[in-house]
Image 1: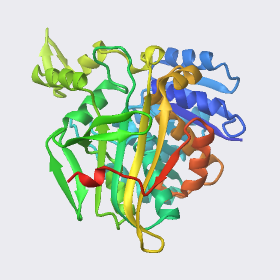
Image 2: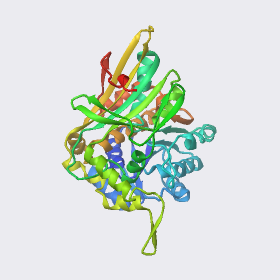
Image 3: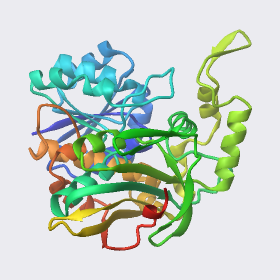
Length: 402
């Protein structure tokens, strides 16, 4: 028997709950918890599975998390709450002897900055407790790291150049909306870019470097260099990498809205006083923007996310390799009621949990996904709605940039 607690009832939490419920042979009992229990109740009702129960918790408070874990005694916590809450959830897991999985690394609430150092600092404590913590098990980070590990295991002796490419070619019909939590999304995009080159990190201005890249079944899209957290762990775990970059597509209308939001001060994360009340402008903006959970019904098109890698094959010969997934917004909505961005994060989180519960990804300590065997994970996501494709010695395009 196995039992999981899913913390978070947003778009990703909804997908995770759906996918866990579809696999009752592994997920015997599922508890869905968030600050607002009514959201969890609505999701559980929509799924209609007999093995889902709900609860409430404030994930900012370790004592509430400890009480939740002690009530339900789960084998694993699937954290799809806010990145600000990673450390409180990890603290509660250590106190209660519970294993841990998340989809995004920790970042402090008062600073638009994210890195793995805060969570990697928990390694020894999880190892001593005999507990496994799996970090970054969404798509990017997540599948992007597993794709890289798969390439290293099966095809490369030396991976030298890695480019993670992320395209959302969908149309939701809104003037401006973010595909996941607006506060996290805007903080991520508006900070400086960064990429790894020859043992050093190179800092760029926000969205300074861009180029059209061609995505399967989609065509060319303007793609912008961002910093993304999986780069930090991948260059550590695969030291032959000479350069690692992350690219994401944005439309011009989206970027125009983003510039206006920044210019009028609505992207600020510090407190301002309004009518005697202190508010954070970006948090206020989040409250008035469309909820990412509600975008799915009218979303058309698809996402395309993958890794473009070049280096030397097992025999020392030059090799270029592209591994990717395309996901339909319409298909994701039909299955789970959520759009493809939530779906491509939620399915891998479920798959990672399945890997742990079936004994394939069990390693006491704190680990990024690329440290585990990629094969069984990629087999599961292919069967669970995220089939993937490979291209050998094709034109990677990214090699011509920089």
